[in-house]
Length: 205
Length: 205
Image 1 (spheres, rainbow over the protein chains, first blue to last red):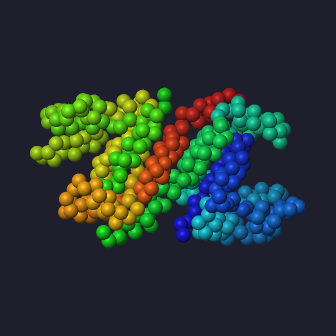
Image 2 (cartoon, rainbow over the protein chains, first blue to last red):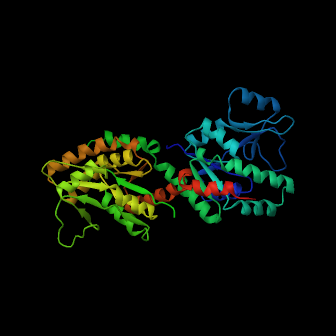
Image 3 (tube, chains in turn yellow, red):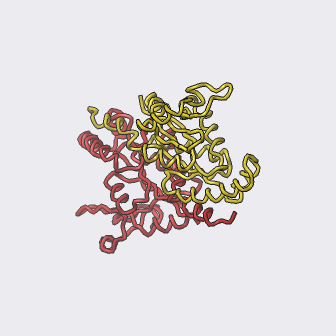
């Protein structure tokens, strides 16, 4: 059984990470799963432990931090905390599933530090004006928050060099197709194919 | 004008480099050109200088070596010599064309040394037995040569780690499709997209 690939879809707020990620998952024919995060917040109606989130207490969350069980986590005093448990990701990868992580730029960089074999895509907007339009159309944030997000976007985009790939989310279908191709080609690297080639070299002829 | 990509299709003798390369070129809608080699052999009927080859004298070939004009070359005393002139490749890349180099493993490694930004694909056979079958079916080599090629193939395959990608040429169409995706995703790297992202970061919002 070939291990799966940890696939990071990241980028500034409003760029379309969620939409692209959902489409990738739906198009994967069950070969890809979302990473399931741990959180200290309470489950909402219909949410299932281990499906939407692993719902854990503050104490359990702190224990997981102390024992290095997170690939990345975010802890803000007095707020609900979120983290990506390594165990779930590893289990899925070992089952041959690709694991998709839809995550902000800081989180993505922590994951790359801890899992350098992960493939990280920076989704970029076609222009800052278009990013503004998307954030304003979404209508989930007040204007000052939008201005802050736009300023943050520039800082985030400047970390492009730490990513493996940059995909401009101009036309959604073409961005999704590019992400799919990146996932596919990530399975054609020497690291990924080494077992096969080693067997070839050992084969009698 | 975005520079093109230097794309190396390489692998053991008999693996199908020529067939895959031709298909890539034909499917590129004129965006890709073959690299044109220099050679000291005489033109055959119908061959045009600058199209099939740059036909040069021994003296000119030696001068090109001395002045570092080759990305790679092969010089065997008393034989026709071949080399890849840097000038032609650079001109085409600067015109925005991708340049395809169909080349053996030693040549490919020299190109990677001189042009580290080139994208190198190792075509691998599905099995050594299948590689033997292809060499025997091709019927262009005597049996002892075939045995030598098969032994060389193992040495060549063991250099897999120096390539960017490994594509198994089992089903031809799927191998071609994978090479196409690799070319496409090579244009989504941070290096390739840096101008675009720099412009984003400089944009007013």
